[in-house]
Length: 110
Ligand code: FES
Image (tube, rainbow, N blue to C red; front, side, top):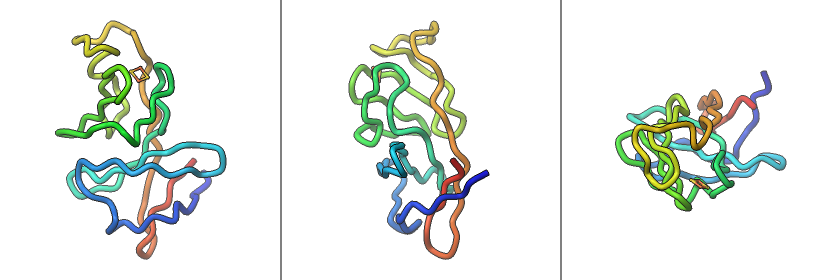
């Protein structure tokens, strides 16, 4: 367990507004969902779309490249690329990382 500072204040995060950060070489997306701070990998597991440019609605993050949809809390695939529902294995789940707020700053366990 390695808690890593992100340099992002928790009060900067808005509901349904993904915020990309780079920690080391790793792209991470921070989100606020129902008041809770969450962290997921920033590169789509399909073909690497930048999920910081994705859209979040009702707890689901949509990739801006081909439209795969992921649950932001669990990383589960809700729709394959090109919006195929139910998903049939066209993309793997999104990595989800523990996140916490220490003082005012978000930390992620990588
Ligand atoms: S890169 Fe994300 S759905 Fe293709």
